Length: 66
Length: 308
Image (cartoon, rainbow over all chains, first blue to last red; front, side, top):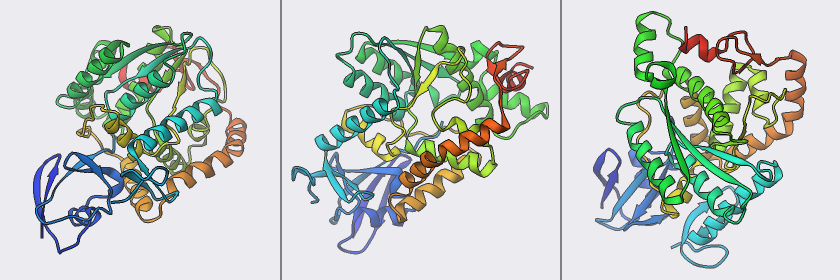
């Protein structure tokens, strides 16, 4: 199953198994869920949201520094 | 789809540390109530205060200004002003200055921009290059930047006639500071994190932190849900142990929800003892002989690094 991920530094496609959740995509990308918010179809979704083939999610970095 | 524990609508957050789900409107209410409680319990706002917002244009300072402006909308005795400090970091600060200007104009808050260049004669980038070249380099760019920003924050707030300066520091910032001071064994700085200065000085404008009990992720979510612009870029100069502490705490929180709160709460319980130790060790505030700002040394660290 492929998920398209919009990241601050550009888009990525993540290939994961069926019935995967947002948190699994983040883990696969090495992103700590404490540091980001995730949107799907412009709505905030929880990390336990189950994704479908060809879903597109946007990862918004919210940790500061500076 | 997970539902809000309070009303059954679609949840936008799972607060693992308390086992609840909240929808957008209950989450916004919860954040505003919590910030109001922090303000009330710590007596952060007094009648007739003029509050200066130290507005970087990042999510924290934008959100705290938006929230204060909203929750104190009916308080005619209060007045607000905002300022942004331009360190001179090309490609980073330019964007947040635009966000800050736009937000102040939308909320009708007077806005000022003060720069390192005007105050110290050079930008942060120029200072970093100069110090490295002259081999007077002290640690990291964050050392130079943090010192100069705090120094300007106090001076400019006072010059604007503010009685309080409001910063966007959140729970994560607080516990990172506590951990850093603890790791360095700096009891004097640690005692300043207790919220009450050891010695009062009329040159100091009291800093208030209405978000100090709210996790950074929740401040970010609040900013997005109320429609504020959020800058995603990190400062290109970020370096130093503080950011390793930040990453460690986030990793720990992801695996053990609630440790950020327990760290802050333990510190609050230990605060009286920390203040006692700091008092015994004694740090007196005097006026810096160069700039006249409050300092524990004859010449303050900002003058030492930036003005010599």
